[in-house]
Length: 240
Image (cartoon, rainbow, N blue to C red):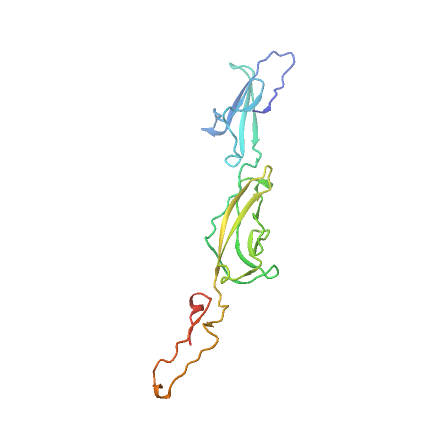
């Protein structure tokens, strides 16, 4: 894969054969290191990528090479030029999600678009540059209760009632703005935390018992009442 061509000026009347040497930038004991595993140069000054070599900007984004032009291999004159090669970005990386707690816990509540609940900021990474590395989060299917803000904050935008539904699974897509566009998908589980929003309820709206006066003794069991509470934990404990 040719990278560029280098020309060498000389007098028209001169009959000269040019030989180009490509040296890897860097020094060893004050001398340029005489090896290069990435690029070649031919006698016409064409710099090309070596066969079976690929460039990965995320691993190495630039190369500094020294090109030496020699008019004779033995007792000839030479000239040296520095060649800077910058590797341009290609959208070859998909966005990556950070570690997300499982499950995400959020208090149940009467949330809305005007009064949303912030759940978690999710910031994916993308090793590419520019638009290739700009990532947008979205739910694969629109959800009436959850959405993402532009900065990656997951919001609750609808009423969440643990007693009606305790867990939600959201399929999240991270897409970059490159071409071709690359994306990644993950599933987030949201678990609702109980709030004491339910009153205790008796098992019956009324209780009745008849007691004969002769049977009325102190400490005698007359009636057992029962009640329940739809909340959890301490929120569901009942005292009479």
